[in-house]
Picture 1 (tube, rainbow, N blue to C red):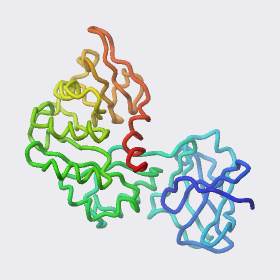
Picture 2: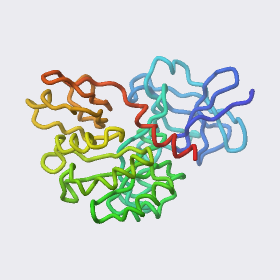
Picture 3: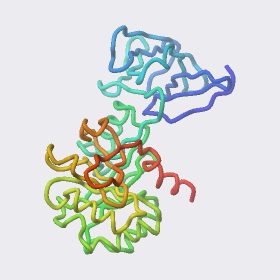
Length: 306
């Protein structure tokens, strides 16, 4: 077999590309031997379910060529040697066929095995096919306990206006955090509170985005809009995409700065249930949406370049 290069891995599974362009599923897991087989299905384990042999390609590495990848969105799979199974603790593995998936909204409370621990998150990420993710926790020190690089996690700095030291924010951004996290509902302040301005100014200077929880009340989108208008050069990511009552969603839009809306709850009426950038509109016009992958990678690319 000719020289191969590895692409992003999801747990013990990943993609490998041969020099000539052929793509393989790679496996670096607990099972080994000459009887390894990849048990797989496509797009949510749709029939027919198939198996293909995993062949040795080096120390602790086996690869398999799976046909018809281009015709499907995801490959769902597990590995067996005929007796034992590596199936990610019973929830299996997933690989996206056309891109490396990033989860832009995770919560990680520490390195333990609890519901929000690093071990549980790794299992969930491999099951969903997430190559990496962006995470926050209300106590920033919890993520200090985690090897974020090994967990494939990019941390956010959780900010409470007046309670989080500005030097701490600067230090965490310098240490590798990729943005700020605001949760007005939990911490009890309006999302346009002027006390946030020194923190958003740091984000502006660092070139990083600010993620803000959206919900009725203190985290209403109008509060978030006013914050974004004060800092038009700072990417504001609106988690959950709460836009008010169903009948009022068309009436809301940012006036002067784009706001990135992230959530599966984006209203179907806005085009698709995915991440979108809500652009400024004229009075009475409906908001328009576009893909915002360039926003998701903005701060990550900046941090890696340092």
